[in-house]
Length: 113
Length: 193
Image (tube, rainbow over all chains, first blue to last red):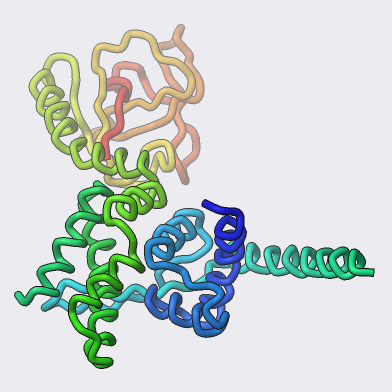
């Protein structure tokens, strides 16, 4: 995995939490909203999306809020929401990101003097 | 089943085989991934994207089924999945243990069911306990079953007064009481859900 991918993956977790914090969403929706709002900078391949959602669930940061079953086709739509712990982690991540952004901006800007 | 449905089913089958989850987890993940894939197909159809391209898109976005399956297994927790699979076998092992217990019931062991919260959380309501009737020596904090009139009751040993063959026991919501050792059926050695 190259460095850009690694970096984006770390950010993606924060953004997934953010997007879910606004309203309960299901997998396809999360990926679509993320891609749209980030103007395709964050295109979470569904290959990354579900392992990420399942780890977040296992870590207790998100949970299934409700499910819609389609009995004739065996499909199920699971809507995820943030848990209180997830909300805490999101707030922390956002704080970290804002510091990083500020620090990076200052130094990168400074080096052009 | 037309070609794309067949393709999607085979694709998910491969993912689930690589993930190798416990049955309930498998059902959930399969249902969820099916929903996602079907949504991709529905939207592609609305946009008149040819089937062949849809299949390429799916693989491009979801990745290789084996890798995805393994990533999902890691995310759900391989060890937890292993434990859940083991847990499904326990009822059989418990049944065997109970049969053995009942088989030697008259002689050495007997099972009782805790019908109340009297000894919660040490013994939970609804659980079965296996009692060793041949215990000679009791200790503080042993859980015992004793006969009180027509009833078998459970208690926690608080104090032993061996010289007088008496034992002090406690039960939730009751004062500590002293019982004679000859009222005691035996000591709880195992609790089964």
